[in-house]
Length: 571
Image (cartoon, rainbow, N blue to C red; front, side, top):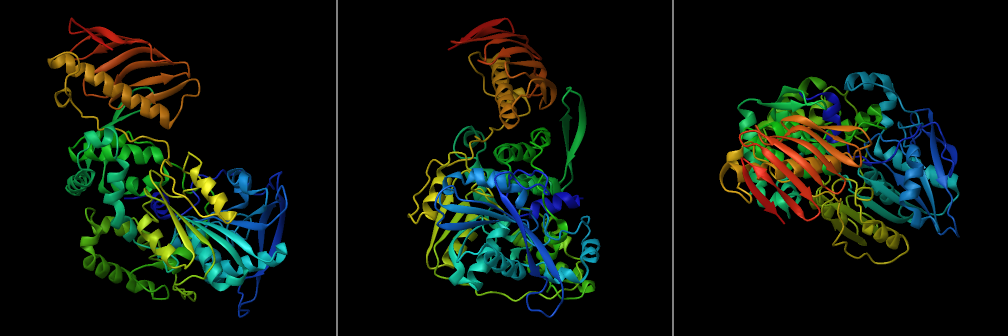
């Protein structure tokens, strides 16, 4: 069974990597204040909310005010002010940068609750009907007045892009420019993983291309289908190694595979390791999958009450949000039966149980808020889309861009969800600042997340081709190369901090000090254990035990050694 926290993480559409200091502290570079807004802007229900915001003043002559709208729904923003100001540093000479905790997040009336929908609804009481996108957009207009500016430039990330699109449609004359990063659809949050199912095959192929992954994983789509089919027949067991090299048996279920895939678009190391791990899983080898990076804490800074209050009413679900709870199970059953083929290669029950369909089944009947027009206004719009984004994919970003008569789309390869803070070359930031200054965008052909995809690692010596030597000795030398490649990937995902230990794939461990690596019976290929020390330049001597024994010395010019009594030299 998927844990509620994992389920929520797979459906979040958030600003992925923002730093989170204490929410109550005002960043030193900012001016913090509050604005009081009606709970219900129509006036039919009494009450107010106090919203927190922070403004980082422009360093030069101000020409605009840029408001960051984070995602989730439910992610706080004021606690990202320092990070956001640094990220958008080149825009600060002419723009005030404003972060605002949307209603029900951070320091703006957030209500604490667990992951149970009914519990969260009870904690909100009658306020739950007003923690939605239209009211949030109207809050922005109240914020604009409080800031005493004529127009707002909006930067919406994921769900925040839905809020930005709603504001632009309601207040086009007050909208200067809009940046939509990894935009959630304006016409309804993806409630049952439909968008993910449509693009998974393409994303896996692109993640694996080019490089060693492409040469060792022939068909990622076929591997995923085979892995899902194997798991549908039962769980797959494999070794889980701890940082001391101790081994226990772990299991992989179909829900685990789906959850890892769902989370891969916000974690570049998980994404880069996943195609090869899936290929191993398809063959019944669970070790690479169980060795995958643990992933980010996607729930940090997310208010679950706001997340559920918005998602359970505004998402596309198999039932109307104001329908009785008692009839929803039948609605899901009918939906799953009708759409079974569209969830392939996963079981429709797994996809449904891992989506908002499961989370929102007990959310009390709540009227859906009024919709805005599908078409957006004629204001300058920049849409940023990562080609590796699974939750708000490129295909849907193109549809978003087509809703605006003056939109430009920048598709970025090798980048997942939340483009601005995931792409490492800086090209996207240059394009974004240029857009804010009124320039046309240019492509970013070299943009990337900076993480090469991991190659497939077979389980046994017999599956390896020999290197330098024939037979088992040459295969053992190949096994050493596979081991060092795997260790290099682990170190890239989590750089050594002085005494860091890294578990082996099938046994043993590696200790990294920043200046050297010590391998202690590190085992990547079954039965081949490697020990020894390498310095920061990759020089040193390793001892190999297993079917073939020997030593390998790495120098500045290559490697030499003996395996099974046979000498070799590598340039």
